[in-house]
Length: 289
Ligand SMILES: C/C=C/C(=O)SCCNC(=O)CCNC(=O)[C@H](O)C(C)(C)COP(=O)(O)OP(=O)(O)OC[C@H]1O[C@@H](n2cnc3c(N)ncnc32)[C@H](O)[C@@H]1OP(=O)(O)O
Image 1 (tube, rainbow, N blue to C red):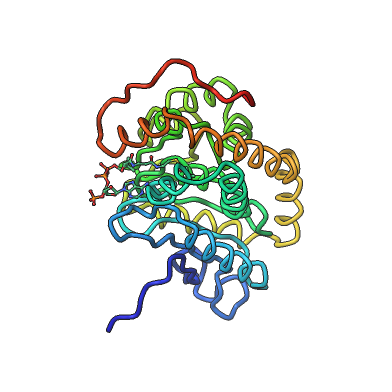
Image 2: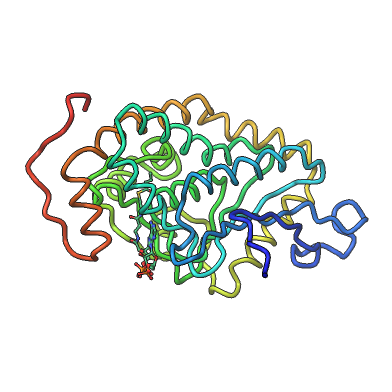
């Protein structure tokens, strides 16, 4: 019987694929670049589950101990980057109690956001749809490159939900207040080209050139002085400190925990799954908003 693929895998990238010579950055063939793949492809487009979160944490913990690591590329296996929260996970939150939802969502979001705590620059190679929490994960990376065929969306309002994964904090910081408003208040699914114009991604490539472009960018970072890169990164990330990101993630988790229980969420999820327009009710928000 074939071995089951891990939900998240990490592999070293050969120096030549990173634009380095065969010796890599250390002379012994290590490029310093690793490739992390989301691998929940069984009909669900790398959707995010609690098992994915646990696998992500395990891999992140190992990466912190990797002394040779200098830059990380993160991508999705198959045709998607990530379709965000798995429908099953979302259904569990609709059925769940508010306090339990808060506890689960807090852990879920802070686990994926911890990408921002890895000690090296991270690059999301967005190979296909990146939606909801999947887009939030891409935004947790320091840089993003997208395939021309990728589609991106922060679609929570279409699900009758408020955003998660600290999107209300990360997105305006990465772009602007008005771009964040446009994307988070409409849930529009935008093309890679539009994402480039809005400053969400650095570059758009042909699909078969995506990994190469991301690995070459990572390879150039890996070739620079590791201590200068580490300190520069610490300064850059410090403009949006972890405490602020975590605070936003917890606040969003608190609100989402209640919105999952509202009729709009049931309608929103059914409409997205059924690929039909939603018919939302009048304003019916919890007192906490
Ligand atoms: C707590 C977390 C919160 C959040 O993250 S909220 C966001 C939750 N995610 C979503 O709402 C995304 C829903 N999915 C979509 O909008 C679309 O899909 C995409 C834009 C991502 C891709 O569209 P297309 O390329 O046309 O593919 P397809 O035919 O819609 O989907 C292919 C298969 O993938 C399954 N799938 C899609 N998204 C999810 C998901 N989030 N969880 C589980 N499965 C998913 C579908 O059902 C279908 O399956 P089958 O081929 O068996 O019909």
